[in-house]
Image (cartoon, rainbow, N blue to C red; front, side, top):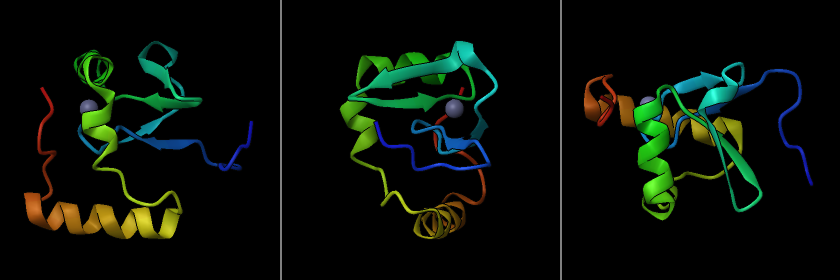
Length: 85
Ligand SMILES: [Zn+2]
């Protein structure tokens, strides 16, 4: 398995696009050889129900692009997560 992250273990909650630290082992889900972390159980369950729906929204893997994507997303949503809780 390839590991793309190095020192900082920050992941993106694919449901609400929040940044999530890898600390919370209760809120992770492995799908197609990748592990996803979630900010809350509600997001985790939503993802488990329909992973493809959320993965379709995913931007390229590289951090720079992903960061810019998130910034744009924040502008669009006014800085609030589009759907969380
Ligand atoms: Zn979330």
